[in-house]
Image (tube, rainbow, N blue to C red; front, side, top):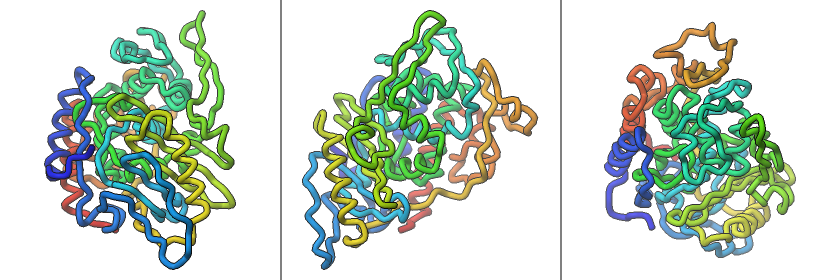
Length: 394
């Protein structure tokens, strides 16, 4: 359960420092779930609440279903209105829902037709799921498909390294969280496996899901029901999408499941009906309850949208320029269109990153100049602390 007593900014800096230490040797120790929604919680003051937050007004809307999750958010992706929530800013382990942040961070930056050579670090992840082989080259688009369908932990590490190094990839992922104002989130492992200092919130996962809906490439990978992944010239693996919402719920358009024994079941689901697109996020659920809980909340949300008073809003991302593919030092094939563009520090950043507003040196262009690595993730944590003090947007 979240820690209600330690100040969040101090925890963020400490978590980022732990994350930095984990970059060279990824931690297998589970992070402590921690955090409290402050009086100026991002998205609105009501979202600082710990319990169930809903405003039925006088509409006579039906009662919110009782779902067995420690935290959840149900929001309208188009208007940004948060229809209901429970402990929306509490800090919890994300498990594999964090792969959505990895995807939205790296899809705009990596050439889908390029390849990356799998490292020993990527292939030694346990469980590795898709079974990458050290020294073999894999297409970026295939890795994203494996990441979002069968939740391939090894693919996540390979994609992070495709940014130039594991440290650079993690710096970009954490910088994207800051860009989205997902200030409850610190990423240590790109696959969401439990790691010291890693956490997110139900609110942040809704911000990340909203960004995912803006990326056609993300939806293409995420909506893939079946595919074949070439592990080697002689071996292929069949991919089957683990998100059963796609085939069992009318209007489902995407999402991501997650599970570790420490995190419990975690889930992000997205669905569209009659021109309304809803996002539901759940953290720390009993095993095998997350899909049914998501369906219950989505059913309620579609019935209640426009009838209940919103309890908060999903904030907009900070201003950024258009994304451009990056040249990866780890890639077997690079984006030759990007090769002619000016680059900073070995070409691992893009125009979008350079134009992104900086908070306490947490943006990716500054991180690249500093050499990324552990400094990048520490800077992301410091940026979190700074932005929490400086921004109090509703």
